Amino acid sequence: AIPEGIRCLADYEPHAREKLAPAAWDYFMAAAGDGLSARANRAAWDALQLWPRVLRPLAGLSTEIELLGRRWPTPLLAAPMALQQLAHSDAELALGLAAAVQGAGLVLSMQSSLPMEVVARAVVSESGRGPLWYQLYLLESRQATLERVRRAEAAGFEALVLTVDASVRAPHPAVQAVPADPGPAPASLPDLLARAPTWDDVAWLQGETKLPLLLKGVLNPLDARDAARLGLAGLVVSNHGGRTLDGLPPTAVALPRIADAVGDALPLLVDGGIHRGTDVLKALALGARAVLVGRPLLHALATAGAAGAAHALRLLRDELTIALAQCGLRSPAEAGRELLGHAPAAGI
Ligand code: FNR
Image 1 (spheres, rainbow, N blue to C red):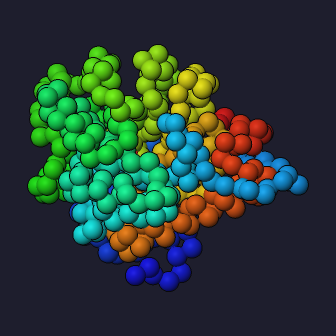
Image 2: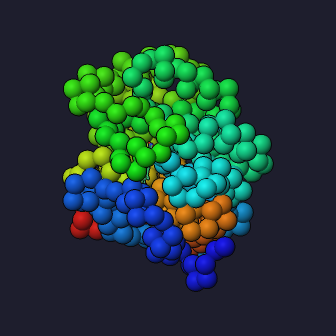
């Protein structure tokens, strides 16, 4: 059940901490190095201020967006996060259904605890749902990668999200303890370096699938330009929640630079530290078409399963609706840089 007194996403965190085994908590909250990137993500959203317009017509206000050629109820997606069985026994099925009933999207992790077909089957037929995308890493062989791609296509996933910011990942001990679908096998550093993916692999994958291909984990505008040149379907501006390398720019700083570099060439999404409707609105104003939410949803899932995750997404959607109205905007598409008007001294 949803505990009393939950008024915003952050309120789920202490409940999750109480509920989760220490190893699971540590895995979910892990950050690289000293945690600078992870903290900077939050601080950068906080540093932005909204400059609302008043007395604008608001009739017909809606959170709907257009993305990859379709209209969706909200600009919210659940970020791909591995091994959700560590959070709740209903795992990805719970988060997927919660997202679907709240009109949010699901990006299913390649390291899902449940088979992708099980999750897709439950989500795809929900009316009023958001996008259903599959996140993948390039595996040790192209054939192994392709096998996943074909399964994702057959299961009804509508896009592929290739994560490119974790080429030399070492599996976390909590991950090694869970046998189901653990993704790439542990390998030595020289092995990892030898097979670290390159742009050639991205072009190859693009040629192998009809599904739109997005890259997740792009921070440098130069990479964003290369992605646009390749004709990719979109980018997720992300520093992996500060989990892969410390000292990275916060995504609220990287996003506008990337938007300046690529213009309208491809849709941008963003994640990292987003837990308030006002954070979502700031992201939209900086050029994002939609946002991914990670750890706050895991906390809600751990606390109260599907009901918790659905409640969290409902809170975020309501906060966004109010933020749009209070800023004089009738839709996410109306949010632009002028909403952040006078940029604060932080240089954002
Ligand atoms: C992740 N993330 C992630 N990303 C990815 O592309 N594939 C994956 O399997 C995972 N797994 C994963 C597990 C856990 C426990 C966390 C917390 C994160 C990164 C995730 O998609 C997202 O980029 C970050 O979590 C940033 O958002 P938050 O958590 O700051 O909202």
